[in-house]
Image (cartoon, rainbow over all chains, first blue to last red; front, side):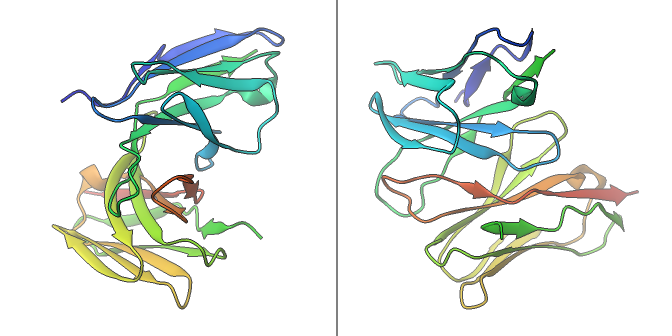
Length: 115
Length: 113
């Protein structure tokens, strides 16, 4: 089975630009979460989506937005890029049940560099 | 105080050593505990998943959770050079509708041949 896929793998942007990152979850998974990982730090939660609805939001500015499509894929948008937005952006999928034993599986990430 | 504290290392051990990695946390609502392995410039890979307190073993890896002390550990037996990576602990209060993972900073491990 294919795992979580993300595109693009690398991206270079300049300050003030906008970027869109894409994620396809594991087949059968209906929930997608986005995380930002700055070099030397653990991933920080940005958003969670389930059935096209936002179910959780981390402590990130409104420049960050996301959406989920009917096929459960997702996009993360970041507007007005700042140098501090340079990071590895990770997508994770889960089946999002209420049962114990379910967790999140991560994709390879998109590495964003803002110059 | 951060919700999850993890010593970033780096930790360097000889091949075959037993490795102990640890995290402490402050949020008593955490019930689900995970260890992820992350190779350089890759996404995190799930290693171990534990619900509530207790031990879980999978091959050379053992995860321990002590909720009374708010302390979790990962032990790696017979460590191999291929185990060289960053190890991230992660926790969640719920596996259901509020499924946010809170991570430690990660510990960089090098296993020397």
